[in-house]
Length: 151
Image (cartoon, rainbow, N blue to C red; front, side, top):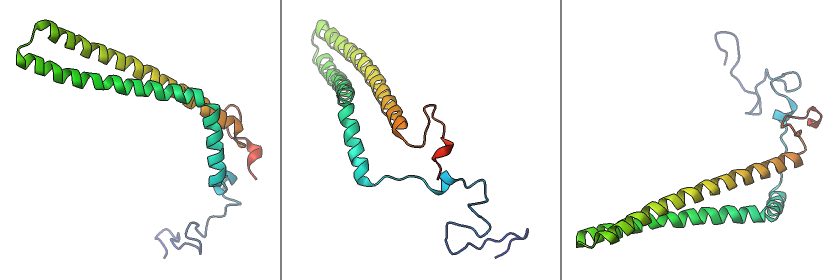
């Protein structure tokens, strides 16, 4: 099929290519866009296990901090339920004040734990990504593409 400007919409035998596109002469199709390195599932699993072993401590810290924040977040709803029960049953103001303080303390503890958990997660993630960049065959330390890597 031909368009009004003379261009053709017919594709070649390969549905992913167009007849007018030559990967050897078209600067838009550099070597990296034509051939990206892809690891097989076995090597990905092995590399993931190695990363988990190397970063076992930081992963444990992140999990413990997130779990602590989750547990702290459970205190407030339970305390609010008790607070409602205490107020509707006409209990003393001291018990109501204790529950209100418990709710405030739980929110503060949750906020602090969440902050540290997120920070630890960010630091761990950046550390792992930096390590992966250092190990990757096609990237320089600055994060830019090495020109010698392309085949």
